[in-house]
Length: 418
Ligand SMILES: Nc1ccn([C@@H]2O[C@H](COP(=O)(O)OP(=O)(O)OP(=O)(O)O)[C@@H](O)[C@H]2O)c(=O)n1
Image (cartoon, rainbow, N blue to C red):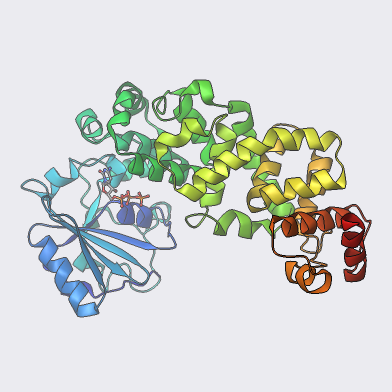
């Protein structure tokens, strides 16, 4: 059972739980982080502040005008919003999709359904409809695995909801109801008015989902993203393959998990950036998304070095391989993944990848036989850019198998000098 970070008796009556938590509870889905959304008829910000004080946790006003505040607990967040309109039903009627417009009065959770092992599962008959306030038959949509808009005006009012529709379809494995989809397509040009940060976050969610690519392709073919990812810059055949490639790589090389999950701005963002690189032929075309510097550097690097990698796959000397790894160590698996998704010979690509994965590989990670200090002390070479050039020549002689010890490195430098 999910642990709530605070006692609901601290809330006034009534206090409604709404949105994703209620939806996911009905679907018996549970995320890593708790994301609770409350609607209070009054004093939403004051209540949030009092709870934050009592539990000595973070508090931030998200929207002073609409009276929305967030309390940040260790295991999740709780947003408190003042009810919009005169009734809860009116508030629910202003939301994006019917499945997200289901509410329940939170005090009834105590000692009732969420205590003990009784489940709220839709399919198992334990779920009792009267506990939910569901004026738009969101529960019917959950049963039918369908995403249905509340009203076209609601989607027009906040066009990010267009993208949320595709993302939530991917996340839940739901279909977008026909009329809703027609409206999403019609309103798509309005997505360009949305702040880049919000679009980027939604795209990030969509692409980080394991089966997100399929819905991304649907969004692209519905021309939802035309203003953010213009179709003339897209490589759809490569994008169609990338998800399968990444999951094959992860099952073949579990060590790659670290690369795909830990780099860049957080959980699974490396996967997002690799998928974006696979999708686009041009890093410049993605600039409008306002990615972080590190993310943009990866994108530029991956797309810039991919053609060189493909040339090297045919034929390459140890020196060329060493130099290529030096330039791409940070994101090499992404280049390998794109080459695989483009259909190049997997055996050759995997042999490169195995080198990258092996910390003792003589070409990807040649050990240091000699340092700049050694050159100063043992050979009396004064500090200058020359030192760097000598050290690089040593590494190249090393990867070519010409030298393999400190003494040989000294002798090698002496031979260059003379
Ligand atoms: N652009 C938005 C964002 C949110 N909502 C409403 O606010 C609720 C909570 O929003 P949020 O936490 O962002 O989304 P969730 O639906 O909870 O799901 P997820 O965490 O997957 O985004 C949504 O369910 C929906 O009712 C909305 O109508 N329009």
